[in-house]
Image (tube, rainbow, N blue to C red; front, side, top):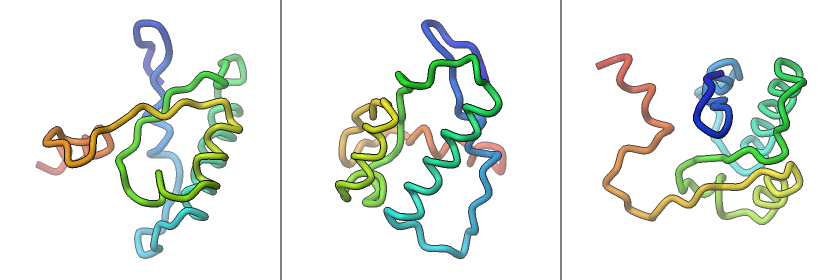
Length: 101
């Protein structure tokens, strides 16, 4: 976790969550991942208020299309940052690619 201006960055927690690369990501598996992420943050940083966490993800259907996904994110008190469709910018979730280049 890195301290950023005005808050904490928890992007490193994604690396700790195991995901079967052969599994298709759907809304149910994405919700499960978000629940495991939340539990891990609460376990590792019990002092941190994660009720106002900002979530940045791409516009993949499991992230945005199903009402349950949005309801889960809202129930955690998290806010999803908007990401424009068809943005030419590299998604923040793709930064891990630079390690292999």
